[in-house]
Amino acid sequence: MARIRDLSLLRRAGNGDETAFGELAGRYADRLYGLACSLTGRQDDAEEIVQETFLAAFRQLRTFREEASVGTWLTAILVRQAARARRSRGRRRTVPISEVSGGPDDDAALEPVSNGSREGLRLDVVDVLERLSPQHREVVVLREFEGRSYDEIARALGVPRGTVESRLHRARERLRELLRDYLD
Amino acid sequence: MSTCPETGKVAAYHDGELSPDEHRRMERHIEGCRLCSRELAELRRLSSLLQSAQLPRMPEDALERLRARCARARERSLVRTAETFAAVAAGIAVACLVLFYREPSAQPSGIARIARNEVLESVVLSAGPDAGLEANGEYVLARWMVADLSLENGK
Image (cartoon, rainbow over all chains, first blue to last red; front, side, top):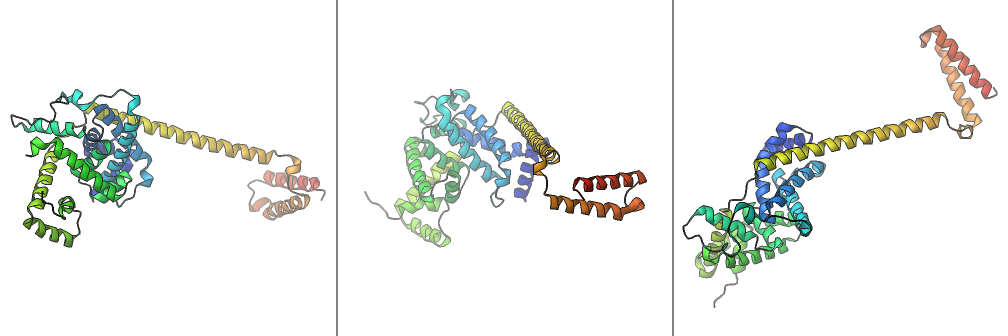
């Protein structure tokens, strides 16, 4: 039912219905923005990626296969837009999240939070994602934040399932190294 | 250092990617295997840590910019659609003009023209002044046109 409702919202928003757009954005914009930040590590890129994701969704509405949820479909579009932004990033100046949010610098990022502040711990975890390769970051974000299955990740990234498994394995190995002090 | 051949499957178990049978089998194995049990515990701690991450929320002004950009894109799309319709309409108009004012050599052959005129004549004559044409003046005009076409075809 929620799936049909989301699709109806997407269609109405694409036709200029402001109320539908507001509801759709309310449901997905924050989540997509968070994902875009995780994937790119940059808030200015993330904003543009979310904009491009919505525009692409409205343009490609006719290609939407209704067996997928709108959320899954938007995520797949966002991953492609993030990859595109990453390829063109070298041509533009961008602002890392750690600069915008006042997070810890690179050297301090992986140190455990001595006062046990959960907020501090969260900032470090976001920061650590920036230390992964883009391919490893993608699979970790889609698996751990989005809860996507291996097959869904493979479809979203356009790679074989085995590639997803091996990337996820290597990414987790790297994360365990980086977050050793948190995990012990 | 000891190893277990099943450790490689622990991640798939943790991610819920095994078949129900395989999942149950791994569950029993992990209960009795210290290495796999430790591997699972580490994966769970890592997932928990990552999932506790508070991802940035979209700022309110960014949401407004998103709304404005989508509205602009829609306006541009409407303009493009209108331009496409206008171009198609103009093309149809030009095609109609060409058909009406085409060269005599491009007109139908004599036999086709005579056949067409006979059809016209039969329609007009069978209609008569009271049948289909609204005013007697129009009937007279129609008769005149048919006669003119017949003259043109040398009938």
